[in-house]
Image 1 (tube, chains in turn blue, purple):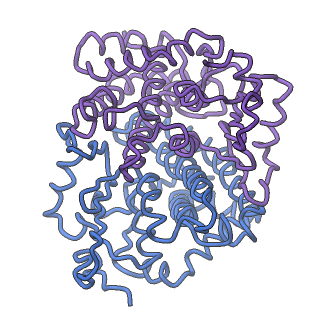
Image 2 (cartoon, each protein chain N blue to C red):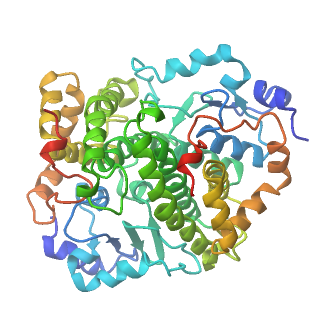
Length: 270
Length: 270
């Protein structure tokens, strides 16, 4: 049923040409999961065809670079994006990771129960919080001073930042999501909201996976400690869904390297 | 027409008891503008009655602290919030600044043209980008290492971070919004999107106002340079709207102090 990796990246709706819906096209840096991974996971978890434009062919890179060029002033309907990921859906261009997720989720069935008009605000709250604490702050541990400079130029500051992150911030955010999973609003704690898979679960899963890669010792201790059992349970539950399992075993899932999540042993727990 | 400051803070729909709509209640730290200011500005710009719960009476503080307590597990429909601001609207609790704005904007007429189903995603993109670069990063200039520690404990790192922020990041974000205002999608460049006031304009205004307070020399030079004429023009335009002008002259507008935006002369441009 799922398209092959190649077809998934290079083709989109060609096999369903009867559909008037434009294809979903993700524009992101090639070769790394990065922030684009949150978008990919929504497509993969729902087996929605999409094109990962620059990974499909590096020759498509100018499509991305022209969009984020500091001379791009957008067009008659779309403001320019500042940075990738960018989603192209027909004539619509949308950027900012949580915003792309917000746009896609209702279309992909990842926005919570449809009969609840407020679900999207709860799901969005949870996704934004995971991105704040477990993606943006995780990134800042290796780039606390200057995003545009090398890690090697800010190692001393990174060491301090990472110590605070592991000691204070990670427990704060993991503890928060543990409480969310204890909440009546989670309807049982299998997923973050209303007992069903939403994009907030996929965001949290990716964020946890990233910090487990970056800080394996610290996260290993937290896992063993048992204090965040529901959070790590959710990580296993999402990973075990057959669409996700298949995706993770495919070549479409890229390896962490020097992106948001970086493993520097000197920044991990002692 | 606008309610008095006192009634605005302490009462909400009591004067319109025929309306079945629950009151809008903002829960945020008292005495500082902070992230709550983005929410206040939406209410003020549209003369929408709201209660600023903890500013109305410090005795209401437990309403906020119990919500963000690390023992709060939410309720049957609302996950717990991690941090303020929190919006209470009847039984609904929503947190995360951009999420509260997203919820309020269609109700307050600040989400762009109604006939355009995609406007909210453009407006949300612009608001998220302003918050990223001109609020979160501005905060990090004085707290680059540890959010929970004092500025005085991280002054050396803050000096480096602020230098990078003023030299690289501020021009990047101001340049971005200058291009947004040149975009055809802005419909003339008076406001960020579609020629009408949206919450993205209010967010950008507050962010600019904050960085102008924190870095008066740096922003003064950028203003004189003329490169960001449309951005500073938008700042003046929003400030000159009669609802905003009146709000800024009222006691409801609080002074910056030791919140997100802090003026440390040693962090400003030389």
